[in-house]
Image (cartoon, rainbow, N blue to C red; front, top):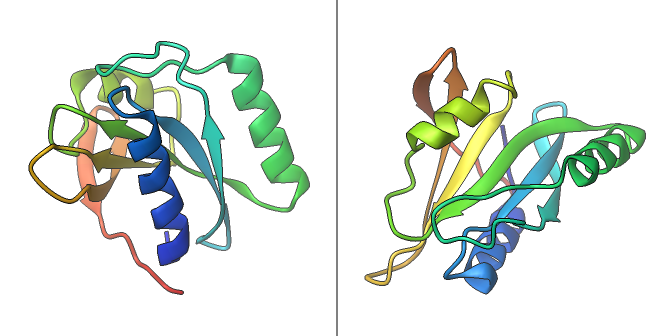
Length: 133
């Protein structure tokens, strides 16, 4: 997936705003290129996990599709660990085949780190975040 730097900046800003809790949201794509970021509310309000309202997710995906796109990625932040999928993330990903998982690592000791993964059948593979702006 190609994602413009300004869209990545929006995701990082969301992660910083929700810190110390995890943030979460969705990214719409068209022809392999990210076109919009859709913030979601973390109902868990937790630094250790995120939870989203199923109706909100459904409405967001519907809006993305109505605009001619598709769900390309789900993003969230890790506030206490590296930006690598946890077992919880891997389990959750089973219900979302074909999407990328973007994780923002927010550690107090430096700049946010953003990484992206494909998670298929419990296997994690890092994929390059291609930025075009």
